[in-house]
Image (cartoon, rainbow, N blue to C red; front, side, top):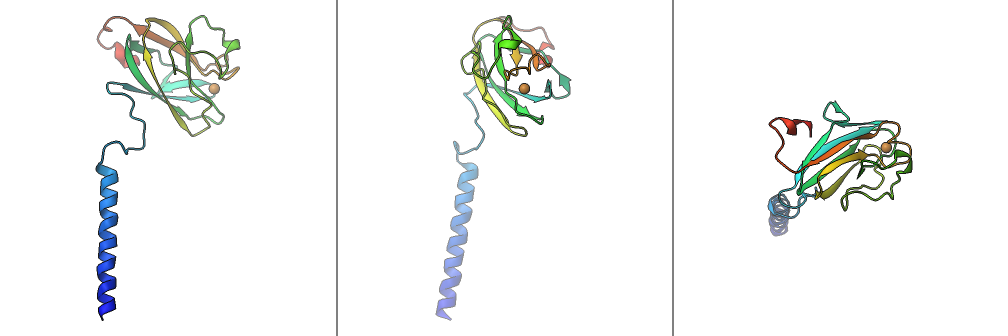
Length: 164
Ligand SMILES: [Cu+2]
């Protein structure tokens, strides 16, 4: 009988320890799995297929940012082949784009994202202007994976943010 009681007490202790550990993981800051980005970063979610970008149901949406804004752009590859995202100069030739292209803003380019996977790029839109938001994989922008990214230096008119 004594060993059964000990076994029950040990079982309860182990069970409670597990519950405490799980609660700690759920409650403690800094252990959430998704990269949250710096404070104040705005999250924008874009998906891509062969060969379009989508924001929700909007095809090739114009992305409107404010100068100085930190953007946490989550790219979901909803296609059947690898894709990527990058912000490049408006006059950059589609034919010259590669995964090694230089983005307009530091870190505004992703590596190859496999089908069904997501990748988050975080960058500061520190220069006003009109840029291209592209898939830099050779040929993909020419096939349609390109849209416009505007960085505006004043408050957008009411409703303009709907297009982001
Ligand atoms: Cu692509």
